[in-house]
Amino acid sequence: MFNKNFFIFLTCLLIYPLPVLAHSFFGKIGFFDGISHPVLGLDHFLAMISVGILSAQIGGKAIWTVPLTFVAIMTIGGLFGFLLIIDEFYFVEIGIILSVILLGFGISIEKKIPAKLIMVFVGIFGLFHGIAHGLEVPAAANPILFVLGFICGTSALHLFGVAIGYFSIKTAISSILLRFTGITFGIYGIYLLYLIF
Ligand SMILES: [Zn+2]
Image 1 (cartoon, rainbow, N blue to C red):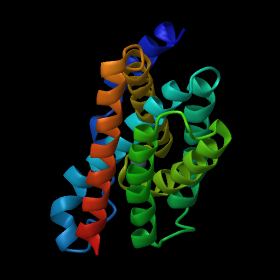
Image 2 (cartoon, helix red, strand yellow; image 1 turned 45 degrees about the vertical axis):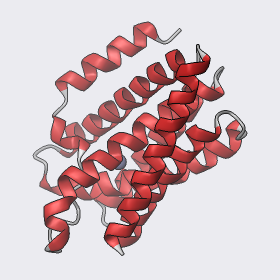
Image 3 (cartoon, rainbow, N blue to C red; image 1 turned 180 degrees about the vertical axis):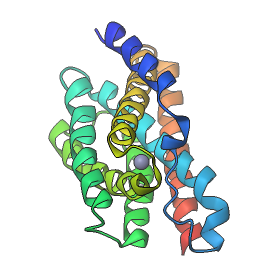
Image 4 (cartoon, rainbow, N blue to C red; image 1 turned 180 degrees about the horizontal axis):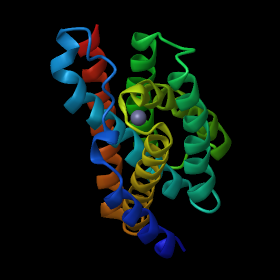
């Protein structure tokens, strides 16, 4: 069902610059300087994989509608960040960490959350991620390519997550493993929250 597009997006992932994966808006605040790249890069990675996994768990149309909701609202958020309409970095970072926590635990619950509710949360999280990515744009040489880069990269991660979810829900054991993976993501998110407070 998603195989052809999956490979298109994988190609997309290969050609776009990898640094786009990392949020780095804490660069000016000393302590956060050291942890921002690996930590915030990983939080983006986990949240995006989680969006894909959740979509696959819900199944049906959600495989497309949930990630598309995220990407669409992330793009709008990116515009806000780029135009610096929002410069509350701390607030944005908490939103991103909450996305890791809630999406992770969402995976562990497995399917019991209505798709529409997931889309509302995914939309809110998309806004936070978009703002964070938008804030990075001024440092990039070409804003349009940069925006396309984070859209492509994020979509590729979503599809990677969809593939993980799609295959994991096929057997009972892998479903359980997937749910534990979600719990691990959630706990990691709580740890991140502990780090910034
Ligand atoms: Zn992000």
